[in-house]
Length: 368
Image (cartoon, rainbow, N blue to C red; front, side, top):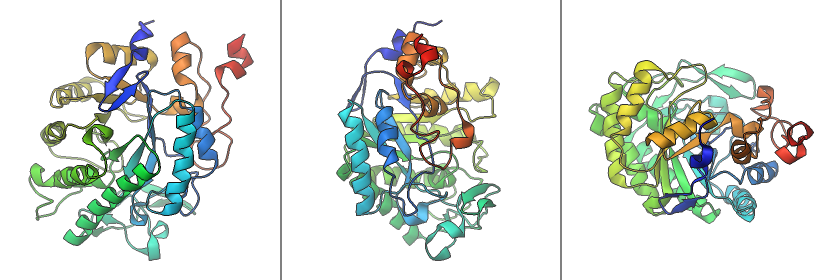
């Protein structure tokens, strides 16, 4: 077993002091109310996981037009702020830290999920060859409409407004979701961005909206309390680029100049190996960003130690392991078994598979 002490060495991440480097990744759980207000159960769920070095909340849409799945939370109304404030209070009461992930899905949506049955918004009118989850179950994503310049500027303002509301809701910072084939990723990558204006064409134009959103969010938060998530390897939501290293190299360098709290890199998706050239690409891109890096995707405690020891990552975010094991850092510390994951309850439902996973001291098998 690797020396896991590295996972529990404190770290300074922008303005935030992390007590450990085992972070909770953003995890969509589809348990919000239909209007995007987080449920009361979410207070328990997040509070249970306050032992993470940092909790990054589930993806949270900054506007009703940014919704792409059934029962995901929002941050664009007073009701949302009030409900999220109860959650941040619960986390802080247990000594935790929590950032809100700001999200717009773009074309990964369905007309039934959007106001007045409107079409999804996207950089270009290219339908995604994937499905989303609606009241009728999984359905093909609806054809999107290409955003006008006014709509792009409105979306930038929505991210700014979401950041302002996150501050009012008591979060410690925000993460901008620019990964996994959602709206900002759709602008970045040329498979989905075929515009011929200042937001399309050369990579400098395609990453422009990301730069402008970062600057808009920075009117509400100091830059050392802003993070951003990216996924250079794609594999999600029918995304792709003809020059991945060139595109993401430019993105990394632009973000490095922004002097943010961190860059959060999704390195591996379930069902895809991060080996060979893919792993080498991730390593090469790491050299294009000067700052705190959170790695995410397929890590174990021991591979996380290796990533931190090598300088590849400063901290590692865990997703599914945190769903099933609320006291994950302590389990890693003492090398205890993790709870078995119930994938049938990952998305939607109530307390089952959400707030009822046992802590180590409650599990007689582990405690004996």
